[in-house]
Length: 296
Image 1 (cartoon, one colour):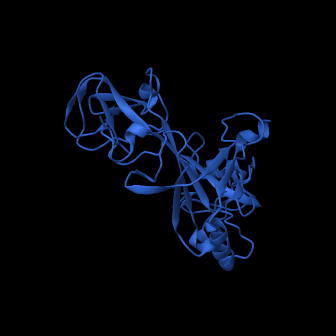
Image 2: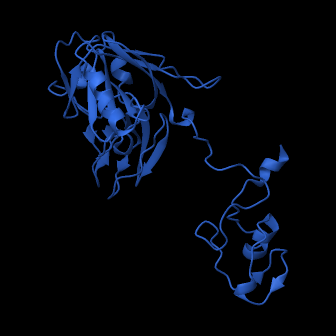
Image 3: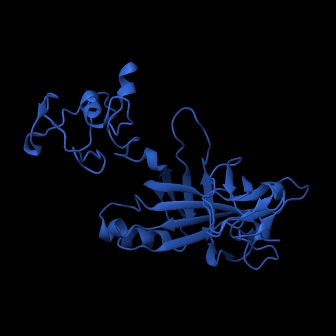
């Protein structure tokens, strides 16, 4: 049976399970762990397993939407779906291509899930690892090219951006269970593993039989840094009196933190002390830098 959507002003008992109204990339549903009545508007749902959210007098705990089914003696087959999203600025199109390899459930034709059709196509996906040490994983996606479809797509893309070879295209890996596919008795697009988002970093190989792409996470793309601004300890990076800075007062100081009389003379020294003069010695400061970085 598909998970019921959350409802407002509704009495829930411990053990009730609901899903969010909107499709969640996390693949989570929410179990009632404190009975009560839901609020008039939907809460902001957690994105991690085990996280809790208070909804008026109800407390919800996030759980996997597929774990219980996987734990049974004969679970439904895992279905692996792939989506390739083009970027109009790079590829001249915003088209989305959807495929499945059909090997896990003896599927002989296309699959429909969440109202979208996924074309059956030989696909080999390798290297989708989870690790918190060493370098970030770089999966490889190899797609059959027997009818020249991928080569044709590459030619069209390269006509917009020479030599692009689908670089920067988004690859979404979606995994669900066969019982949740459209047309099944328990069809439910909300029941799935967390979505995985990758980006085509380069075309690794192209032949008449197949085309291979090396994928990268968003943090592993050339020129992308985390955080996106440089970590500086003692110099504020905000523009003075901007939205980030937030200072709108009528007390003025110069760049050396000396009091001055007019707004025309007002200039921030970009130091922590300059921020304290304006907001207060013990106030919460919108200082646009990382003072603690100087301790290491």
